Image 1 (cartoon, rainbow, N blue to C red):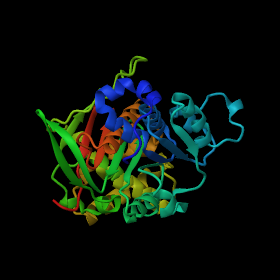
Image 2: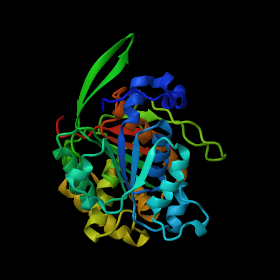
Image 3: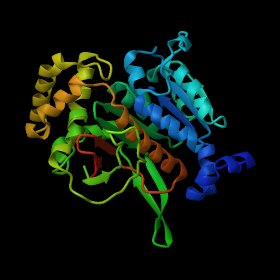
Length: 363
């Protein structure tokens, strides 16, 4: 992403953040092109964050019309129905985002992820996918990105009830980080989404987030400042990387992702189209998956599956946290500065903790 220097107007507008991450990082941001598929609550938060940070352009894809569910978590959609005028969710969000930073080009493309070819995808530096089926994440986007000669940073994000999930694929990624007074060059190799979820559960480290299995291991815990749920004030999100053991209940994210996603795929459902009536089928699938993967069923608590099946809608405070973390990760990936997340992140507001799970085919 080498190119022109920052304009005088950009330097003045982004003066404070340039003092934090430097002019070179800001220049890279101003030349970056980001594609977002699926404008749900967490993605709306992410879009706001990267637009304010000063990315070059943001392209939105979401052909849905506004529903009550969309209004409940997506603050970019105006509450006044008179402005809808048959506009899609993406078009309404585009109008709002343009007001946040007029120097960022925000546009809308109509279509589905499955219709985008490699020629279209290669025009972007970052692609974020939400509320898409498992097949769309794997075949329609991630797999195509990996076939391109250009490295594209790929992310998926999902929020249900009080939990949130982020997946990251930066392919072969080089970055710099500060170590005492020196700058150290580092490199990480990421598995694709398909490779990550295809790792046999028995091969995972002993403790893996139960949310991974329920929705899909390193045991690094991220403590994040969370919204004060009893007030209107939202505290800033900051990431730390202490090697701290997590309470056993929160070690279930990866597993639950696997069960819920595969249930929706088998039933031909869109993401989030579940209810309490689906619980027996979900529990049966859990049992079958655990048997085939030689995994103790206790790794995926029924009470957690019930919560996710019964309440698939987003919880706005969790959207703010997940959107903040995703925004930070994308800024790090574009700027090439700081340790990136590898490769799953889970947050559950019930215990207020976030967990990084490194699920790779190589031990």
